[in-house]
Length: 283
Length: 141
Image (cartoon, rainbow over all chains, first blue to last red; front, side, top):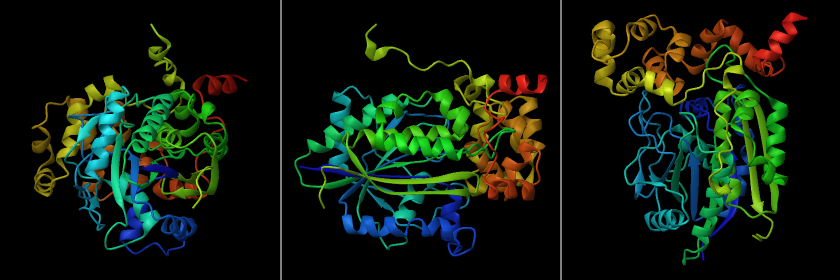
């Protein structure tokens, strides 16, 4: 059967993609950011996932204000990088896994998650920046990728609890797929940041650390964090962190913290990164 | 009502967070044409048309005079107050050749250099920035 064995949680700051694409990854400003992923690149190369389920949010690239799905699962064969106003990022086209994705869609809908099925979609920096950080610059991404877009732009996003429950439904869906596939789930966005208003530039190192700790050790607490706490403590755009609850919900109760990295600043944002493996998983 | 459908998230209380505008359903409705105008700038030919005559291009969008004025003045804070959202507005400031950091700085009243330095120093601190009522209480003492 297919199995989700680990999660990769990581911020998806667009400036990271721009720095990489413009050859600035060795600059003094960006080098510490990219160095923070040296371990992660080796870890994922060793793990060799067949499929990544990539939870991210679209930033007014594929969806605009016309249609705003709360959860949208990419079931297409491929997803080209989006032109976000300065040309598409020079990264490989994302190759999907339509058979597994359609199976997941069917399974989670029967479990009462009324997910939107997407058969045509461009993917923006929210999806491609985490791939760059984890895989560098290959000719083709080394695995199939199933995008799961979550609305966290227009308030309210899905609750942390709802996200966690969706993660559990994804776990069940993947485990009912007959083919032996090793799956890793990515939760992206965050950590503390605010891009608007007089409070722009907000960073809350202590809260971010507590959030990471609770994801590892006390997800029952993490899934109950109310919106107001995200907005107040982690900034209006810090709300993206509800997506990390989806990836946590897709793992088992007991996990191993494999790696953690935290760096301020990445442009306006506190960059956070956390790799978790199911405790039962033996490589 | 079963526990499954019990609402756990209040929609109140967000106004107490200082210097923050929540992009909720009502603001999204108010800012719909501002945001859709921004989306149109994802196409090169639209960017060229906008740059050639901004006022004329903006007349194609049924937005309020206030919204139009804020766009022409590149008053980013005002655009947010009038229903613009930063991710949509990013299409406009990218057309201008500006960055998220530049726009964030203008909304805080800092120069871009001061803002960038604040970020290098660890960002805006949370202490004193959690709550308007907390701020008012401190100011009164």
